[in-house]
Image (tube, rainbow, N blue to C red):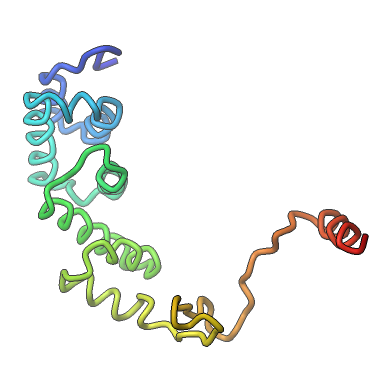
Length: 170
């Protein structure tokens, strides 16, 4: 165990940065996010860890980037805007073979040229709009080409459906 349950030592983050143990470092930031937010020494050590991560050759590692993305979007460890944009762009590039995932990340930085290009190809604007009764308040897009019905049933089984129909009949 690297840290104690009560207090995080800044040296722990420096050691993890030196050893290039990015996953462990992000786990420590996750577990001690409140402490890092309050203590300027810990925040500085966290910044050193992240700067080392982004300067290294493995900065494109998917699991660590996704964990960092989740820490930021969850409000547990807020990144500067430029750093968050860098995380998003790397995640979009990492998921370019999965257009839905790439577009999901790209929507966080739609003004970045690469993200804008992904959104133009695979985002909601590239999908067909559906006509519906409340078009003035909400936009609906076709989710599956060809008109395949992808709606989920409210019932988990046929038995639940039969019970509902019986109750409705009474």
